[in-house]
Image (tube, one colour):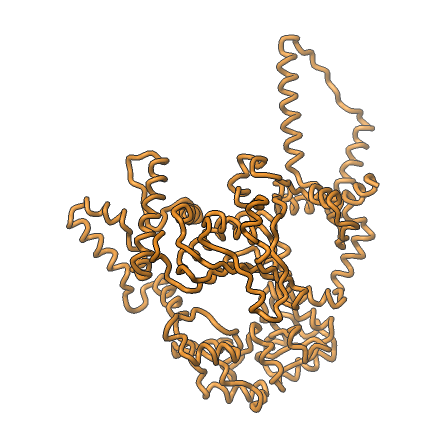
Amino acid sequence: GTEREGTFDRVLADVPCSGDGTIRKNPGIWRHWNHLGSLALHPLQLSIALRGARLTKVGGYVVYSTCSMNPMENESVVAELLRVSDGSLVLEDPRERMEGLIARPGWASWRVLREGQNRTRKAMKDWKKKNNSKMMAKKKKFDEMREEADGHYGPAKKEAKVDDTSKDGDEKRKDEDQNKKVEKEEEKFVPSLFDTKPYIPPVTWDEAALNERTTSLGFHEYKSYDEVEPEWRRRVRASCFPPTEEEAKKFELEKCLRCLPQDMDTGGFFVALLKKVKPLNMAAIERMNTLAKESRGGGEVDGQVPKKGKDKKEQKSETDKKGSESEDVAMTESSAAEDKTDGEPTTTSEAKDDDKPKEENKKENEEEETIRKAPQGKVGMYHKHQKKEDLSKQDFVPADPSVWPPIVKEFGLDTSTFPTDQFFVRASGEAKILYFLCKHVKGELIDRGIQERVTVINSGLKAFERCSLKESNHMSYRLAQEGIQYIVPHMTKRILSANMDDFCGCIKLGFTPFDSFSEKFQEGLKELTPGSFIVTLEGFEKDVAKKMYLTMWRRTNNCVNCFVTKIEMEAMLSKMRALGYVSKKEDEEVKSGESAGKEPAVEEKMDTSS
């Protein structure tokens, strides 16, 4: 590094994460969550954090944040960042300057675990499929038929004479087959005593109880990196392990912020504030380039292409070396050096091109220029896709006042309280979506000309969308679920209240006929004209924070559609379960499961263990 490295005074590295801290608002994540995902994200997160530190000026700050509570994605990344930077970065504690913030200290030690192959989603799914009540009943019937057949005809056994010379070979082959069978059995999913429905928390949280639980659930624990098997070292890395006692005192990881959902009624977040006190060393830059190369599937780093005629080790070392050198040049000269032109080759490829004839270079440059300049008019899906992407970079401008009269009339919006000045559209002239922006974003950023200095990729929530259905000839916009909580308090028309059963009945994909609901709710539906409307849960009409609202569509054929994403439908059903509601279908499944004696394998195991 050099004293002139860095471009920005402040850098926020809000890295991709497993998102387990957001389960409270997005329960669907838990269904697909696994620990291997966190281990896979670790190197990418470290790469982004190093890149953020590289872009930060000396004396500036870089913030590392995730919406995960897993130390593999949090403290382990920060610890490695401090370790590899070797004094260039120091942790700072922002608690004093953030009054009202409740944040727990970061961890200085943690366990390094991995899930076994027999605990993958596929293995668990296959086991459940083969061991449900229907399959168990079929298996029992088949075993009874086989026993009956053996008893009637007698087991057919034949003893074959074996030569002494081939006896040893057969025994060896038999042992190998037995070993293979054992290995295969180990790979199969084995239900844990702790896989209970409903979930039963541990009686005690002591070390022995936790070890028993993690082992039973198929986790492997490593005390050090030396214990990691060679085939797992690409996932479980040395940087995943906690720092030594000496490093822990030096790093001061307790300065990190762990914001737990129950402390402030929010989601779960991890935040680390680091100050850059001197330029990054060459080791940190090389590590950044290596991780960047790996995250791109082992491809080129910063545009570097290995030369032909050299073995792989020489190519790798030369690529990493030149990648870091070109990175230094780009960072020390100016920030514009990095953003020169998309796809433009760097120093190595330019030197490579000098060996080619000038005519060939000229021809390639002309081809690049042709690709770069998009032709006018309709030229296929590629051009349409590019055009669509360009629209997302249009500035946000206030919505045209002429769009409001029909919307206000249709949904009975209270004009004395409805904030029409907080609705914006893209400056493309089409106004397909009306976005709702909060007062602070509008007043502190948009009104102060932030869009003149940076490109705003996205902001606000979708509140209304242009309607393309023929049934809505009288109305050009429909309600959008994303920002519905800011519209409902001002609505006086096209809003229905539903009981638990009717509300749950609305949460379905496809068409739902009127006769699926109670008579009272059907009467309300029949009074509506075709178009967009809202269904609220009884008792939660004014509770905006809970957002128990559904954006619906009333069709002409006495059916309704739920215009809510599948993942939000799951979240809504989860909220209803938390309120104590059990749907008729779930109730029937529980009763049938109890009568059929579901999950016999788990129950038998629990009995034998006691």
